[in-house]
Length: 222
Image 1 (spheres, rainbow, N blue to C red):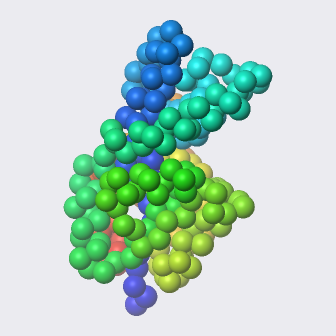
Image 2 (image 1 turned 120 degrees about the horizontal axis):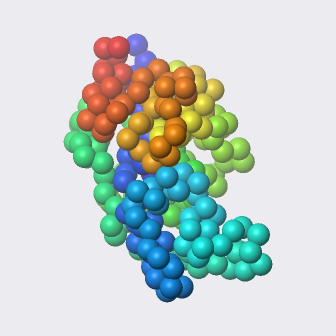
């Protein structure tokens, strides 16, 4: 049987990065005399990317004449503090240790740009077998391109890989790539989101459940 491997989305799946964004957004809101936002208010914004979080940081919309400059300020400050507050979700360090001890290939496929992802992984001490970022490919998720590139980098057929993420586009990309998919229900979901509609092969309600599902998949015990 072909050796199996596993790929992870980054923010809200493998790493709880919202705390970094809470620090950055409230840094700018405080500087501009805006009320601070709570973690619960900021977490659902993370999947929206830098533009959405820039809006929250400065209390503006994307049609603001100075938006591009303010987004650059947001991203530059984020780069300075990235990884200083965030952490792996509970049990993920142990899961990665098990995968590595068993020589199971694993990687990260994220919409995050390489400029930020490499700094984050370095500060967290993570060394995946491959890292594919949003600016590495022309067509991001939900297109399967990033996942197929990761499969090529790892040297494992896409059909022998799994992928997990906390956004519908992650699951759509995984299905399109022919991978085993797991919806992460503990990530940065807006309250109205129903993960059961995404069509994943499995749903993980907690990091612990995700770890169990991944181990079962890579061991071929499904």
